[in-house]
Length: 435
Ligand SMILES: NC(=O)c1ccc[n+]([C@@H]2O[C@H](COP(=O)([O-])OP(=O)(O)OC[C@H]3O[C@@H](n4cnc5c(N)ncnc54)[C@H](O)[C@@H]3O)[C@@H](O)[C@H]2O)c1
Ligand SMILES: N[C@@H](CCO)C(=O)O
Ligand code: NA
Image (cartoon, rainbow, N blue to C red; front, top):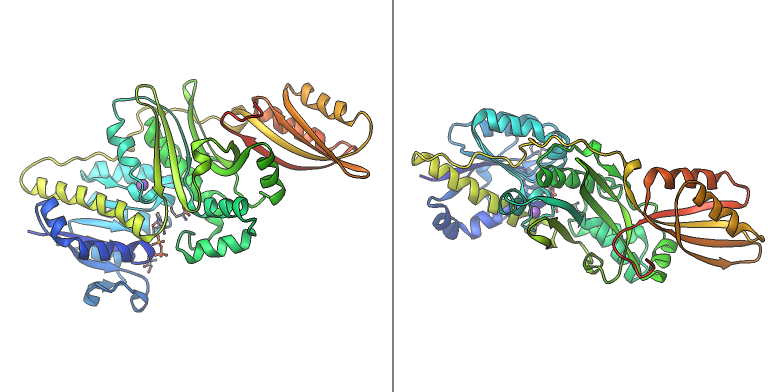
């Protein structure tokens, strides 16, 4: 007897899921032990669906009606957004129907609701496609590394912004031009502010932190800065330091708590994450016993993301087959939040900073500026000065300091008469040649 799926959404990712289900049908049957079939496909505009291998009679606009049908065993959601997706998935899980979703926004905002519904219905919840698209990352975290203790996860988890920053670094391309290309290639979200302002990466950071540390972190608890303020001057300044700017996601354990943040950061060019170009993603995982692990690959795009969805579909379909045979199935979501770790505010996070100031080129300016850093307990590692006629630019790189101390330093600098502007503040991660 076939395992029957309700597919919700048939856009960039959904159309590729349809294609793979069709092209791999024989292999899937062999791997699952039963054929895997589409019971129906819910979309908003059936006339716009372009999946070539799709029987048009399967199309419907009634997602809820479809997923409740008794002949539907499992639900695959590739629509996105909070509602109506949350309502559909909670309903499916409560009915005991397993769910595969790529919806990081929903998981990061209210993963707890999905987890609770899955527990209530005795259903499984899979979401490998939600973070780092086609890269197998969540299953290693929720299964392979479950005997270890993860201490830190550092990653490039947004393809669109990595594409833009790589283009700005390599070719000097403009921001708008690079964003348009990323959108055409299917990497950017429908509303690219989710990518550019770091919301997409923050959602993924919340999911990664929740899985890695067995706690509940929501998107709202993730400190977030996007890339819209990264200028070509910052990119050039990074290059002079032997660094490159990346939008990083960092989730770490700190003394019985977790700190989770997403922001542009300078990293040394010899750092493995610096070589991650274009729309590629990469995630570094540090664990007590396993040491350093790196996961690399296509983090966005219809086909790679559909690969992750198909992997989850096979896992779910096998469980359906096992349950029919009287077995128990897997029944775990990975979102068991037993550790209940508090999330540290950004002010307590300790890292290094690259600060660029436009100052009046007068005697004693450097000493005055340095004294402000010193007063707030921020130790300076290097200073670089370039002068113009009446103004100068100071590039200061600090040693490790709490974010609150740096924020207070910058606030004081902004009010000083000799400081024309604080042109940029970029965090520095990883060991740099400059120390
Ligand atoms: N595109 C990627 O590279 C990528 C990568 C990883 C995860 N994701 C996630 O996958 C999901 C889908 O992304 P996408 O790029 O395929 O989006 P998309 O906009 O291309 O497709 C969305 C689909 O959902 C359907 N839909 C929207 N509202 C609906 C409604 N009310 N009822 C029924 N159908 C509705 C649309 O008709 C369309 O078929 C999102 O959660 C996204 O974050 C996308
Ligand atoms: N918009 C996302 C898609 C993959 O989640 C990105 O650019 O990474
Ligand atoms: Na993935």
